[in-house]
Image 1 (cartoon, helix red, strand yellow):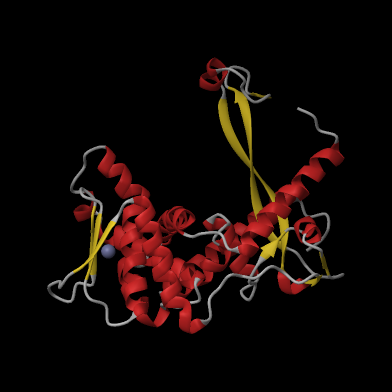
Image 2: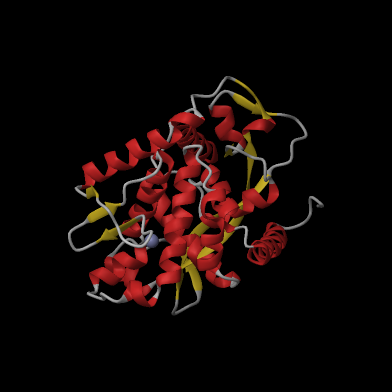
Amino acid sequence: MSARTSAEERRTEMLARLDRELQRLVDSGEYARWFTTMSRFHRYSPTNAMWIATQAPDATRVASYRTWQQLGRQVRKGETGIMVSHPKPYWVDPGTGQRVAPPRTEGDRARLQRKVAFRVGHVFDVAQTDGDPLPELGQPAPDDAPHALVDHLEGWCAEQGVTVMTEPLPGGLSGYYRRHDDRIVLAAATSPGDRAATLAHELAHRHDPELIRAHDRGDTSYYAHHRPDCEAVAEGAAHVISGRYGLDLTGHSAGYIAGWVGGDVDRFKQLHQRVGEVTRVLLPPDQLDLALAAAASRAANQATVRRGVRR
Ligand SMILES: [Zn+2]
């Protein structure tokens, strides 16, 4: 790619590449594997997570050049950055069509139009860097993963006041969530891994933004009318959450997810955004997430000072 290629051209090319990757996913039905991949980049927007995975399928932890420096690590010479897209909001006066300063009053806020431009930035995988050892990932050993995940999810339920009960359920049902009394009912699980997966799935229903909105407007039949979407989101989110704990559910329910998602690229994109919203709520940051976030904010502050911007 020539250095003269504009950011806009690079972004257009990246979007086309992403569309091809989405089409490949839909054609192959490998959603389960995708959702497990997404667990590695869950702090990024689903679109950026997909950009990263498309360009660097083996990447594990990514951060900007300056963020790695803040963590005492240096990107090696000659390494190619992984493109990501940063939204930059701006405001337009609809009367003049001109770009204007951000609104300061409620009146301005109502009158001005908020738009979003995208800038291309770059991140690097940890494997492209050398330097200080990183904080612990906080990921349990494989044998402990199901127990650690159950502990996290049950702790979350206790904190949020969700009742979790175990009782015999009919017809191979492994669990359900009931919103009106905020209750998760689980069948007696055959293994800690099953219990973890089911609990993650039912909690994902609880935090599904569409189900919450339906509930808020008193729509009690939303789930019944949109069952495939709701199930795809819950199981996709369960994969991301479990993947974060080192528990790969791909063999467990790959067919189940593919069946619910079906073969529509646009629909998959929407479901994917919804999964991102659920997992951002349910997944705790680990030590490295926290260190990366702190380093990123230090790097951003320095960049602001260097540019001499004062507000
Ligand atoms: Zn379900």
